[in-house]
Length: 412
Image (cartoon, rainbow, N blue to C red):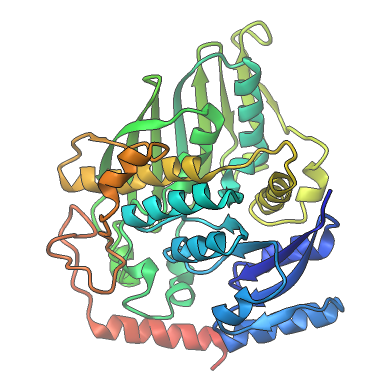
């Protein structure tokens, strides 16, 4: 197997991918790029401690000139697609952190670039690789669960305690301008991956703004729900948000031959645990266990319940043409489109909206000029609002306070 030369764009979120490269024998890290001097200084210390030589770049053009086979995109979540397209056109394989695109125009351009380059595009939806989710996928693929009929996914993350550090007190930070549906692939993505089925229709709903969102100064409602119809008629309920009262990550699958569900975050072993009842195995009863395979022990040293190992492991295998459990560009967009079109549905009172299939070039051609996004600096919120609810008008003093909290956390 060829040892792949990697570059990482984004030295903060990219630290987990750097850890993988340093510890693994299937790839080597050659370059890291970040605009922040503080982040690059931290990276320099990280590599000096490990005596691992890496080029550190503060601009993307210098980074692109480094010796690389593939690039990890761990920059801002709303900026992945333009960098992915540039890397693909340069002949580099691309590993994209969440989320794949911010607009339908970007989605069309990304598909074009993947198809024209012939390079690997890998979407790093690490929640698809939790132990329980991987076991659900195995049970579904083996036929033990039968036909996929219904599923639920939850990703509820109380972001308020760390909001100042995440947004720097910047009113225009992408996290402050995104809608409640944008960050949808942690909740829906695992169900898409387990089922292997494309979403074809979605209805979106939002909770009203709360005291918590008012303290955070975000445009997104506390959480959103997508009710999704899959190509076989099965249903999925996806709920996710940034301002619930408690965190929750949880998944369940109803098949024609059985039911399986993960543990819930914060309870016992969480998503490492699976409970399943299967026809011909444990009729009417549930078996609760912690699934494991050859990589389980190694994965315990990586973030997101080991998911950060699996995404890199399968990416390298995909580049080398080996069997892998990867997520390609079309599946990535299936995951993202659920939130994109649920936002449109919510603005229309929850009316169902069809989800296009960008595997068909003639279909994506219809959306090639659609660059609407609430995260665009020039977005007209009166035309393209972030919520079906009236968005609060937050005072500048709120962001000044959040900025002070951010600087205090930095020790400045």
